[in-house]
Amino acid sequence: MSATAKSRILAVDFGDSRTGLAGTDWTGTIAVPLPRIDSRDQAEVIRQILELCVEREVEALVVGMPLTLDGTPGERARHTQEFVDKLRMESSLPVATIDESHTTDEAHERLKMGGMKAKKRKDFADSVAALVILERYRHALRRS
Image (cartoon, rainbow, N blue to C red; front, side, top):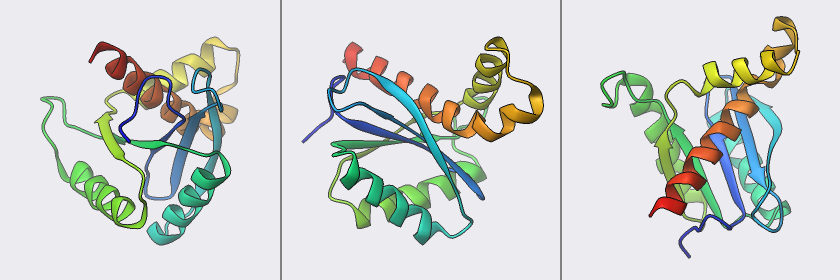
């Protein structure tokens, strides 16, 4: 099944030690940040993501792809693509990618505007960045 703007989607902001997550509610209309995964073990991160997919009845996954300023994949994107490839091998769900440029900056700005202190923002930034990824992906789905 291909995703629609109303699908139950899980967004992933993959990182070396912290992976931010965000998802839609069961109706596919409300997007919320979810607790991040703190692990350097890719297999463990994938296992936890797939458990969450079952728990939340996810219909599609989207992973933020860190492109360079000129929009091309760099070393970080190659590492993320390896993760995406492994995720696709382990899951029967469709796995899409979308440019995640500046999502962490946007996440920090949103948290700052919400009155959160800098020290506390670090704890939530990864999952809010995943929320931004999810919003961008849903916006792209609506436009297509």
